[in-house]
Each structure stands twice: as structure tokens, then as C-alpha cells.
Image (cartoon, rainbow, N blue to C red; front, top):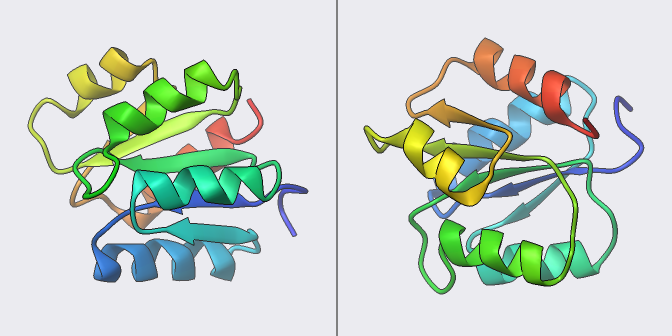
Length: 120
């Protein structure tokens, strides 16, 4: 395993979630998944994670609300925003994320971002 703590992927698009999970697991990462921010927060309650890959536009609890709740709970974990929005960089800065990936992203860029930011 590459990380002692899993990577949490919070993404509502099932196909993207599956591709990201598969790519990370193929590289030896332990992966936890959630389809919205509320589920993501529940996964965090289950134990420590090394990194959060976070979609911004999701049902139930979006990326902004998820990030706000991380701060409220004083959970210090690196966050990489994954979004198709043209203003991905702005959104990442807005929530204090460590980095961003613009969808569609190259799997090599995903793996590089995970390697660079987990437990940073």
C-alpha cells in the first residue's frame, strides 16, 4: 500500500468515481468513496484519510459545504478539487484546497496530484 490512510474520493458521477477508484487502486492506494459531501463526511468519521479528492457540484452537500464543514470540525486533510468548471482554480482557492484537477483530466495528472498532496 502506498499510504497508511486511504484516499477519499467524493464524486457524484458514477463513471468518474469508478475510473478514479480503479486508477488509484491499481497504483496500490487504499480508496474510500462517497457520492456526495454528506457521505464524504461520514467516511471521515470512520477514520483518518490521507487526501480528499473533491467534486464541487454534488447533490445533498456540495463541495463548498463539505469544505466549510471540514473547517468547522477542524479536520486538517489535503484537498484536491476535481471539477469541469472553467473556474476550477478559483473554486479551489475559494475553499482553501491544496490543488485542483480540471475535468476531463489525464490519469497521469491525477496520480501525480495524489502522490504530491496526500499527507502533505
